[in-house]
Image 1: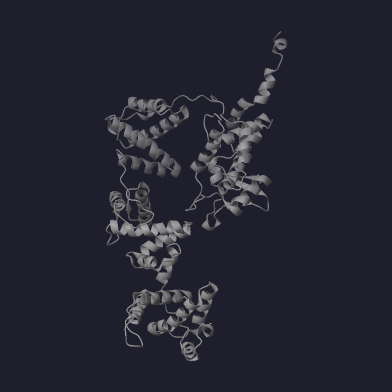
Image 2: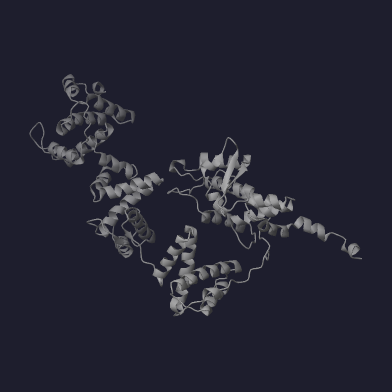
Length: 536
């Protein structure tokens, strides 16, 4: 390559005698393949020997990396001396020397790892000035490690670059000279100050709420990663009593789901007591009754919900009595609202509506491909939402053509034949849409980074929207309506209760028997009987 660029034999012999000949030839060849002009290649070829001389690079097996400080020192020396004895005073000369040195050292893998790490971690940066800024700013390791974590989680490069920018703003406006715990109100104040400061940033408008929220979101998540974020303290009356009770039910074997549910349930009740000017020490049955009545009337909670709340309150009051933090004998006086066995018909849509929803999602849109696979599982196997989101790749046995679900109520596995249509829908999702690089064992993941297990709320949102868009009137919208529709469809087609019970994963046949009340086909046969002849 050098023979093509340098025609003067004397100069060529000098270039050929400089160390790292193969590395220089390969670098110039790669630039030529990218389409750079001959004049540009000649300039690179001329600078490289000076870079090697000033950085004292030699041939051999040594692969010591060159730091940015050494390059700056060499560029400074290059700009202040020349073979004619006159200094090269042009700033562009020094900048060009630095640029070529960095590009070439990166190409031969001899550039400071910290510099190359900055380029990759910040979303494959190209601008040398921006790279240098991120390289030289304080808390390098803490910033870059978080950006690398985002990259591993699957965030897009433009999101990572934006985070890198916000990190620098956070350091400036939080006045971080050392790493320390940062409270939420400090981030609020810093975001407000930054949002009302003039800047040349193209994507920022002074006072814009999106910029304000962006500063907070990126800063909070970065500090959370470093475990330096102090969340605002929740104003919960008698919080110590609540935490003590939650620890108590955990010791008794309560699950995390139970703990979370009881946390929100009891917290709301304690806020009610505070609003009424009462306390656990002054608790009475009339206050508990008043609270449950408010739930049923003002919050429009049904009997089942109120009964569950009453059960939780009885457990909490029994604990207070045990610790002697409330009057004795209250727990025995808490009664659930009356619940009538088989009192309500299952509220379910027509099976044709369910089929229409499933077919409508059979498109080429990425989100529809995922949702179509989910709807196939919900409709074919009449699953609960949690059983879908907890489905793992290992639960699919493609050779045996079986699929295994972990039942939500008893935690036991149940194996079904894998229907061809369902298997094809899942395969299509895994091959075309699923972010398989995330390394998660769950089948259904979020469409955006971080790629985590899909939530029940996400499934509820798109299923309920489909029903509402079709004007279907239901008591309860969401994926459970599809489960009820499947059970109703089976019983209307003459499937036995025992088979339906096994299909739904019910532990008791009585749980399934409620669907016999919606056996409309056989009920119509009863209505068509000539009762006049029978009764006479």
